[in-house]
Length: 97
Image (cartoon, rainbow, N blue to C red):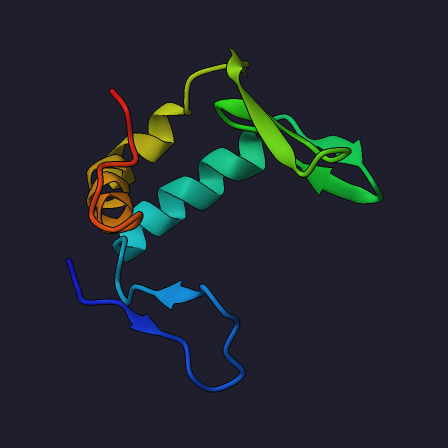
């Protein structure tokens, strides 16, 4: 996993960049899967929710209301995501199995 760097030019606080996090082939599969998914129009934008529905009224999710599992095409990037997320919150594991 490449080391992340906080974005510096035009930076957004809390934005981290991970170069080459997924391969070009994985990117193509993700785009293909996303494009084939069901889109919902909310607040004048098209959205897809995975795992938990984002509640726009509260800007949050209810972790007790899982709507579905992540799509299969996300599986190749899950180990990398888990590794990255474990580095947040002062090193405490943030993904619960």
